[in-house]
Image (cartoon, rainbow, N blue to C red; front, side):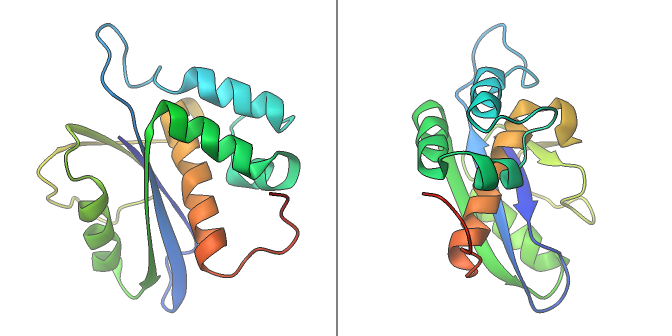
Length: 153
């Protein structure tokens, strides 16, 4: 499972966590999971480099992108009003239930929460699953926190 956030983690802010879970495949590392989806979505959004929610929001059919991700992986999200780092840990604990391995964006957590699963922190630039989680988190925050201006559905 890959997890990323959207929103500034500062008091009185709306924050969303997005999670994308793939079924483990023999001979496939977590670094490869979702690569085919990221490449396809980047073509849809006419984006280069790292795939970000802002690319999808501005240049692609958001509904089609989310359907594509949902068809290939389990998608989860949590949206909450940020008060402290414990809010992030609580939301994360709820999202990762049932996961064996969690790959979280390296800027997500302030400390090392006890989740009962193996946790790896990585930068999203080279991890396709985290890029997909960024899209899910961005959409969850946009749809729940009233930031719908100028989005194509």
